[in-house]
Amino acid sequence: MIGASVHGRDIVALHRPVESSRVRVVVIGGIHGNEPVSPPIVRSLVDVPMPADVEVWLLPEMNPDGIAAGTRANANGRDLNRNFGWGWLPYDGGPAPFSEPETTAAADLVLRAQPHVVVWVHQPLSYVSSIGSTPDALEEAWSRGSGIPVRRDVTQHGGGESWTNFTAGFPSMLIEANGWEATPQMVAAHRNGFAELIALFG
Image 1 (cartoon, rainbow, N blue to C red):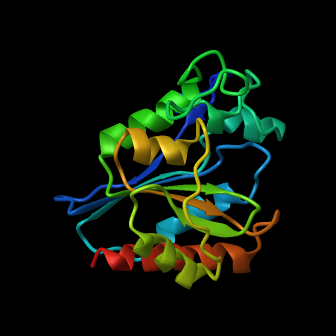
Image 2: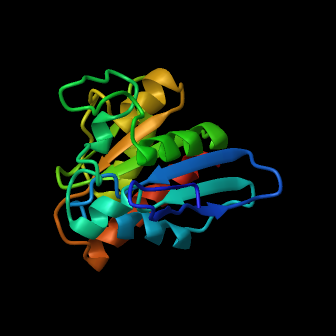
Image 3: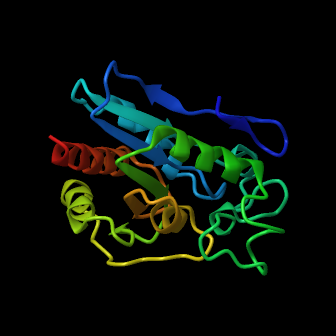
């Protein structure tokens, strides 16, 4: 448990600890409660074989209240992917950057993990993008494994993926899954994308 939602629901991350980590990866889904594809994709990544020194944090449901209600926003009516500190704007970002407990929990996880890459999973626009200074090889690896096309240089004001790279300084990727149903084929495709990403680290 890395935090609690507005309504007190647990925000739970799955952790693959290692004795000595050479590579650390964080994957976050369920940012928008009306995007039902990302939580099963993130959960499925536990099945990807890992080198013994790769530490992984998986956060399938960053927005458990929104998921329970089927709403994009959290229980305060905030779009969590506009509530991060990079490029925050008051008209849709809430009363202040990181005003929401879910946003704070995700940011704290990233800062705690000090990852080599953070992956944010959304839907349904069907692309993968390396954010800012993140190497293109990362988006190309996920694209190769998943069959999802690359879209270069995506940024979003108040977005988690933009904050991760531009403010926190970690490589960051945005995955937009292709569609609204987490079919076994779709989930397997993104699992393959993640496996290709991990393979880049040796």
